[in-house]
Image 1 (tube, rainbow, N blue to C red):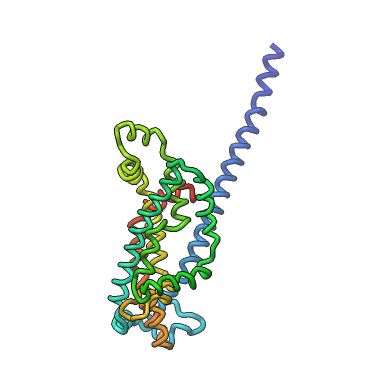
Image 2 (cartoon, one colour; image 1 turned 90 degrees about the horizontal axis):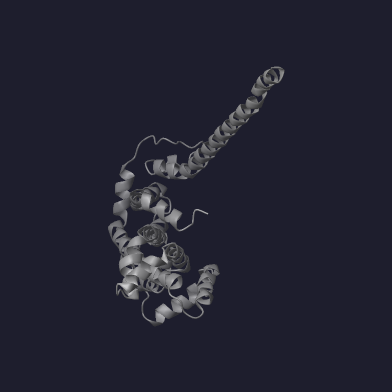
Length: 301
């Protein structure tokens, strides 16, 4: 009877530390989650402030834009800045040219990068890893050192002042980063799927086009978004190769707009804000596929 009583008196001190540890773990999780949310809101606020300043300044007068301390709310509110800015230069031509170049870039890069990436991921040939390493090494080449030889080649071909230098090179590979992205995605698809298709008589092009491409939709959309953003925001390429004002893109048009309206910051900011709308709309409509593609290709880190 004495031993039974001693066991019963020792039971509560054993359970108490477990409850204490669980409580500490929950408290630690809540603190960590709170710090994470705080940092996310902080960096989101830091990233949003410049765009908010751009948006509000597009409705301000010229004198109010750079006043100190800054006035975040326009007073007076000047929506006429958008009408004056978009009619001062032929932005409808710039918008059409940018959409054409960006659309052709998206088509060229998604097709060529997926084709080359499939070859590196699924086709066995001598020196495959060596050639893939050479392709990846091109990531470290600065774009500036390619400008002069590229311009000489395109000028000899008579392509200067046309859209060809901004479109045709994209059909030959689609860029090392995009090839790497597609190769990584294709390597995640089980080989049994391709073997089953080959046993049913499907050719290698059929396996690529009818099986792997439909499965790679998230990765293709991710590449399409990156390519569209690059082509839309590209300023150096259009300035180098385009001469006629009717061939200007949105970025080149904004640059020329600034040179002729040296002090009209209100109109420049209104035009810049209007030109960001297509990119924002594209991101919100493709956000789900973009995040899915980032996760499935391993770019999340």
